[in-house]
Length: 146
Image (cartoon, rainbow, N blue to C red; front, side, top):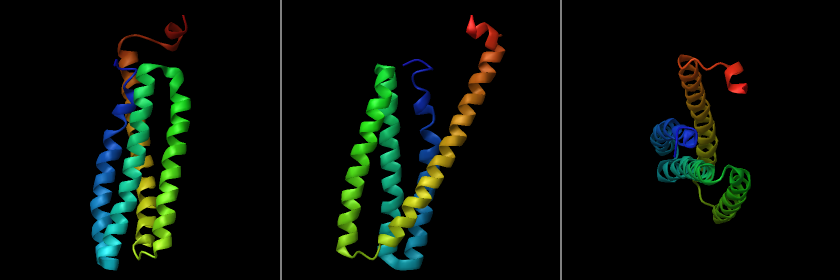
């Protein structure tokens, strides 16, 4: 994989670090508010986001490295499969009457906000570094078009 092909993996580390910090904080807060059910719910909520977003990033990075035209179909398929599985699991959890479900919902919401924010920051850093590397090499947009 060259620099262009693995750019997606460069975005993965910051969201994972930030989400891991959130995982610890959410679990502690869940414990303080609702005991074991709250801690387990918060942990599960953030964990589901981390696992599903990481899986998507890895599938898209792999597809991009093999054949760029596979990115869209595999991305759509990944989303369909993961949201179907998550929906079935959450429906089962909701039907069980588990007391940690609200904490899990808050964990999912917080996980999504933290992951997406960290991914935007990581992508911005990568794009800034790429444009600095391009300008240092003397490549301008006019040169790129030729």
